[in-house]
Image 1: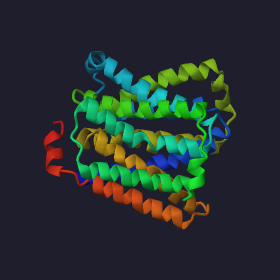
Image 2: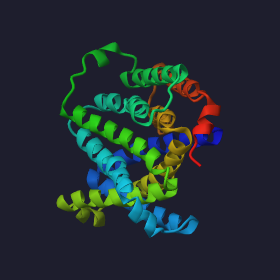
Image 3: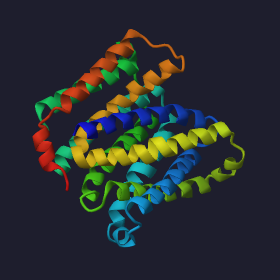
Image 4: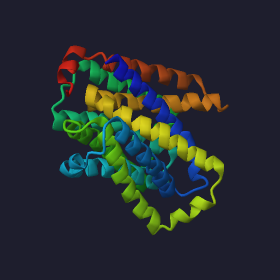
Length: 300
């Protein structure tokens, strides 16, 4: 389990980097094109890895196509559609507040649908880490939170939260029958097809010939690190630790995003440091829940 938790920390770091590279890319290319290229490149790489490490088992694809398609539609297509469109009509503070609900919604889904056992340490860890996220994104100001007015974009971002929670729950079920690599590869390919349809409807592919090398570098980072490695290790974490435990590590994403901002020269305050300590403390507390029971629940 220590190795599993370590991989989930690295995944959070990769996804934090994707916030910076993604923001850079969408300033010069459309959001749907960025998502399509990111997951299209990742899908090709994942299929190559699948062919080398396991095999392209068409029988498995035909047998479990519905579950894999649902993973692609929730975690790849729907999440990105809700996320990018939602951010166009709401503030960054509102967006961060809504996306920070991911672990809570996944926890609720896991308890109701998967019947996963949730202990008091895990609940306390969730609350502590969520409080740390709230402290960071509000910059320690109660007025920032008190004067929030929810807009249409906030509702769309709630759709992104539900999509990711659904992806995590579905992943737990699907990976009872297929490997994490198989689930990640085929769901990425199937989700990319849906993204490509929307991109074509917007005539977005014409931008590919005009974007700079910097945008292609952003796309490659998101494809290799944030998607191929990130999604593969995330699915392994869900398989080994359960959707609820794995979702805790999502709260590390804004903290790592902050640390990356420090490296590139953006100012931070003591509030960010305090929030980071709360998030890390919450993760450590929540992941100590009954490791013996966790091993017993691990899928062979």
